[in-house]
Amino acid sequence: MKTAEERWLYTISSKKRLIDFNFREIWRYRDLLFLFVKRDIITLYKQTILGPLWYLIQPLFTSLIFTLIFNNLADIPTGEGVPNFLFNLAGITAWNYFKECLVGTSDTFKKNENIFGKVYFPRVIMPMSVVVSNLLKFGIQLLVLSGFYLYYVFFSKVTYDIAPGLNILVFPLFVILMALLGLGLGMIVSSMTTKYRDLTFLIQFGVQLLMYGSAVMYPMSYFKDKLPNYYWLIEWNPIAIIVESFRVIILGDGHLDINKIIYAIIISCVIFLLGLVIFNKTEKSFIDTI
Figure 1: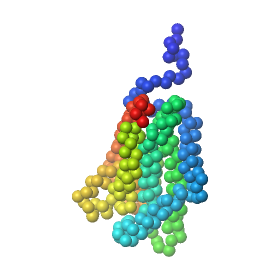
Figure 2 (figure 1 turned 90 degrees about the vertical axis):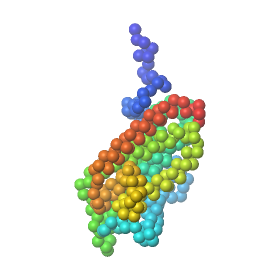
Figure 3 (figure 1 turned 180 degrees about the vertical axis):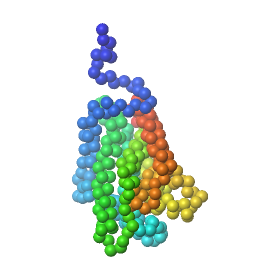
Figure 4 (figure 1 turned 135 degrees about the vertical axis):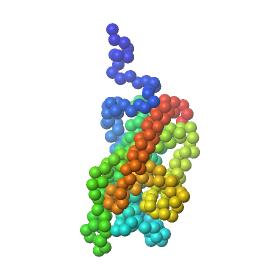
């Protein structure tokens, strides 16, 4: 005689493990995941004149401003044989993906409270959809970066010493690390905003401050030379390590620090797992506090 639980095809229960990332269930809801991804892409620039062109305009103008202010006015070096604009564009491309993953997932519960209160589906699908949809935006910006890279290599009147080496093979690793770090931090912040709404306003301000401490517009070696006493602030910042390594891979200037990369991998995985634990715990009761 089968028990009642054995007769059901699926069992929905509030009792979950601390680290519950059910790939089988997520795969079962893959159509919903792609639907949310499509929604994020289409609705973001709906009824705008330029539409997806904003994917290109934002990093280009930011890179231009960084080049004028930090390189031309402040005279911050970017390395011998490396064009300033390409240096900034590479850093901003990497930073934007992390930032969009973090900001986009940081208000998951608040933004989707109506959906969460009416129908069941794996809640983690919602922040995952943000990470996947931003991957498309990252791909477009990467194409723009590749276009300028080819220009400086083949068409520029000035000869630049830039060339990716075998390090390019580990490029997907850093994309995964940016996604894990942004997703993990986003799930932590999203869980906390169910009780502390001030974090919604703080996250935008905090991300801007974090950018200046993440080696986006300067090489880490420059910070070490100018402010050696505060170098530890970015030396052990995992996103700074990822951005710096991303530039090394793309531009071929410098070398990868294996020890720091291993550190960034460990921290990214720990933050992701911690975010998943907090997210799973919060989803059981958030509807009563939001």
